Image (cartoon, rainbow, N blue to C red; front, side):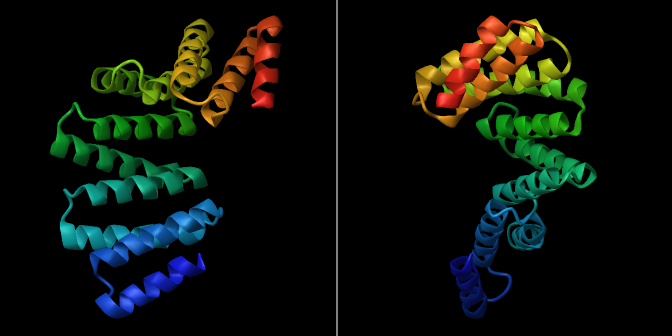
Length: 220
């Protein structure tokens, strides 16, 4: 954190408050603060970076969309859903206008909005967005990409929340198989998916299948 603050102060002195590089340094400091759990301190840094990028680059620049997503993620972590939602939607709209409907950045934006709606508890609205993310990533990235497994796992979590356990179980199995193919066995996404699948199986009363998965996840 000290390094980022010193870099920011030096940049401001040399290049002025509104320089693009200052916005980059503000983002770096905000991310550092976020990693330390200080979301309240990160918010004004992200806001300043967004304001500089809007002023210097215009509203259609990808840096602006990235800033909107960053700020939305912070508000989501804080539980401030009213503040987060318009930021995610604005970022997604910007990417759609700039890149069209079939682009990986658009898929990420849809995924962010689905994750937000899931966190908010609006599972019915999150489901079609999660399905759109999965379909778009399958088209753009192919079936073997790790982001396919991420999308399958996300959709499965939403279906669990909606009580559609059989559909969710199938997706968790697919995600786990894909993660095992594309990632190292000890990767946290492998263990995380095992845990989710084990919890689902326990919810269904299938303890015989759930127990070995839960034990394996703990070992990883």
